[in-house]
Image (cartoon, helix red, strand yellow):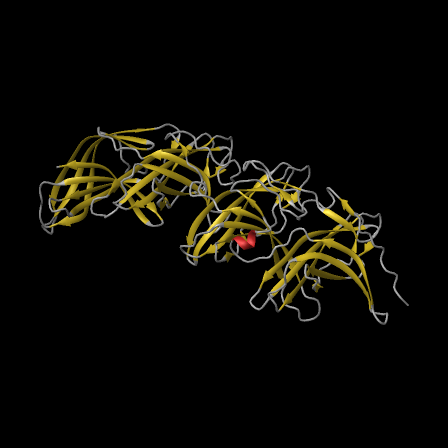
Length: 574
């Protein structure tokens, strides 16, 4: 007995919000305005079930071509409806028809008002597929002889992704400028996105392009970011990206969040575009099937940014002012005020390099203790050369209300660096771990060392009224040294200094340039530096002769994971 064929409807109906997003895209002329998408055109598969095309892809493989299709179904009825039995066939303009295999995860029934996606795929040992023109749902009655085929629905394919690289791969995709807002055609989501930052970062396994997108939910309800991928392309090659967020990202109505994509690339490659691809999962039916295959379909192309767009623009900054952070960052609490208090660059005698030191004041403006923000930093020269900062080794874990704490960063800079104006970038190392993203970028000049007797080591101001060095003979008939210091020390109010704070190191250098004595002095503890006259014993180094004249180099030292960083603050001639 024959099965009754399903009722056929070829009337196109615009669903609006039922099968939102898709079809052809109308691009805004202004790169700063949002890109809008035409409503998805859907077709009657049965009296209650409507169908719309999400994606169609014909991509090259090593031995031929992969054909992949995802169709969205919507049950507009009031009861559960079974998806009619069918084959999905893809037709080309030359009249060739290909039958695609359904994924094991395809739904067989739809609840009332439910949307389901059906995924199909097949591999062909041919690269001569041609242009795709339409898709058909075909019911095959195998109980009839000869078999009876009934076309349930035919849908034209307005947009097909043909894969590949270079300009040819982007022919059927809408093209966006860097930073332009967009929605993803064919994807059932009202979220919009825009590119905000890209940076090239070197890792132990190679070079990676890190892309940051800003996702926005303009709707009235909660939405989860759909599955999609961002790849990079050069004229010769495609580089596959991966989202850094492992867990689903959900946005409340009106909320904005960042998404991060890491794209491994080759050294020296010149990238031309980003490609936004929707992704679907295909699982083979039957026993012993392998792992699910990810099917990716190109939806949009975004021009690779120019040199002045790919990095966060540094804003002019005055030392001592509160830093304006990215409002979406979770690294710095809204109740924590951060200010750059010092930025010095200087040579270190005998070290072969320069050292830059940045000192930040962290203030808890709330009424309760809060965690100390843990950000990284980079110093970027006017030529674009980047120097990574090393944060001081020990930092207090909590900030008490109404108080400020000091955190220092040190940068090793070559002696050839003669610039005085730098961009200081503060980085989030958690959101896209193991990669970093920018949360603030400051344009400022390094401070000149004072020419008078006052030295600033925030939150201290030091005045060296007098420094003398004396020698003493040891029982072994060698010589050791003592410093006699007459200091004036003042400290800013409400700034906490603990044993994590930097130290002063006094080094005695003889006329031959040898360090013959040294001593570290602290600003905390029982033997801390004080205002007035004091003696510091430098007997940890001894010599068998006294050399005159001598020079005393005074350093500020900071302990970092990379070792002790020294900033030369004063030179005293003997």
